Image (cartoon, rainbow, N blue to C red; front, side, top):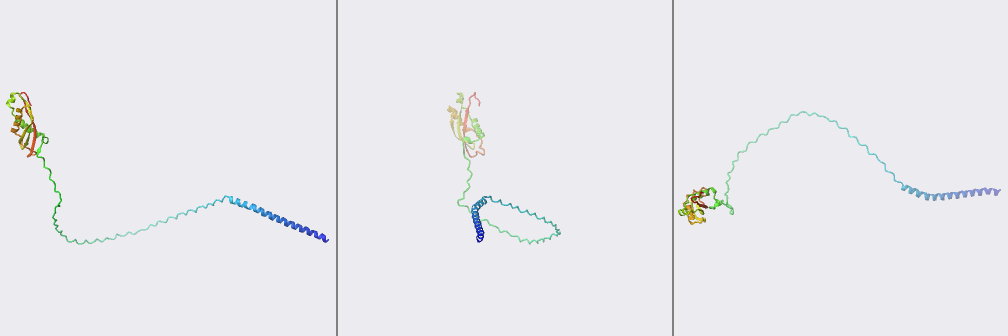
Length: 225
């Protein structure tokens, strides 16, 4: 009977040990599973995209304050304040000006004296004499020509160019510039210059020497000027 009582105890102890071994096995298995599953869970959590930031709505726009009421103030009419008129000051006594004596002007030692206008030339050439006055002198010489009888008898004709100086109605220094080819006619031309009645000198030519060059013509009986 004692042997029969020990058998349930042994069975219960064996069952207990077997349960403990099963628990130890399950515990060790759970530790292995945790080592494999937890890193994968962590890797999955890291690869997940971050959540988008939440949009914060803008604050509401404050309403403008209501306009202030305009207060119309009535300004009392004021009379203008009279401005006092200043009394004019008495006029100062007249000031008698002191006479100013001009200082003597001392000429500058290097002051240039104004040069006088150049005087007109005293000796005029034929190109400087007016045509009107030259024609008067030429006519006076031509009117004084005396045709020599010997030349007229020989039926000579021609013209001689003479030159002479004129001053205040008088001629001087007559000479032949271009001969007529006949000495008788050339001498008659010079004689006409000496006896001619020349016109008086105008104000433009008074006191000045004028040189003329004139053709003296000797026309035959059948020739006319």
